[in-house]
Length: 284
Image (cartoon, rainbow, N blue to C red; front, side, top):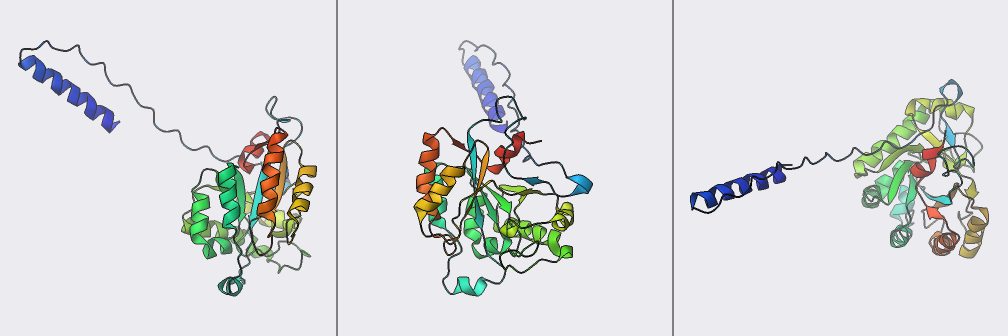
């Protein structure tokens, strides 16, 4: 607005100078058009709390209901867990890689909108990457807890978070994202290992998040056969599917190669890739 007003004033002064020199006075300039203020960013969609205020759980876009014609749209969300437990710092210092920058670069080259479920410990270890992902409009960062400890037991041998500290685990991860400079952060949470129970859903209610699970398991965790991972995803995807994969080279070394096959084949089938926030938009 300031620039437009300055230009208008300059035009008026120029016209007055021409008239003072004997030239014809120009026609009056119309008032500058008002420039609308930038629209505020839309609040990411969330689900309503469950019974007794429990944290709601989202798994995929429903196959019926929602906006007319949208429910059966061929969309799919690829999600990537950036796992790192609170006690894996020494392993990272020793050279083990819990990140996968080549995968993120591939998603950028292929222009695949994606949701990264990040632990707070990962954001602290790879702060520059967390900021780069969290400021790129292609991506959104969701919460995967701070420590990647389990919220119910048994859960793949993970240490268990106490009921009284579950909400704090979520808040601590969000704080780590803010310190890293990430901005594209959504109020979604994924339980480490996908493990949860009614106690966890109750305990997380104060955090105000929507828990996000999946309906397609990629099988990329510790897999070395990229084609097998790709086949499992391609066989499982349906309109509205939500796929779980990983963004950790040490624990999912075949993911990048699998994505190289998954993305073009799903596009050939008519699928469009979306973030979880868009997939959730038509959910009740």
